[in-house]
Length: 87
Image (tube, rainbow, N blue to C red):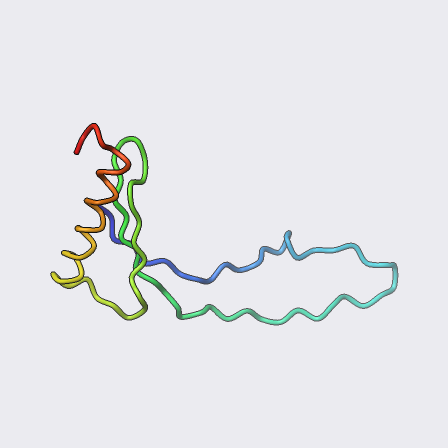
């Protein structure tokens, strides 16, 4: 299992925002992007064959023992579906 915080901010690269303009024309206005403070916790379960189960926690949720127990029950159900030979 891996516990990861995912950010929602993906800035546009300089190369990705470049464009051809007619000679003598003004370039378009560029606005500064501010990084969003939004992050979301993702619990990922995987083995050597790949990802078995991912669970996205609601915003501002901590991984307590109760939350972990619920997620483990969901994982075990999905594990039995995806890897029946191992269950």
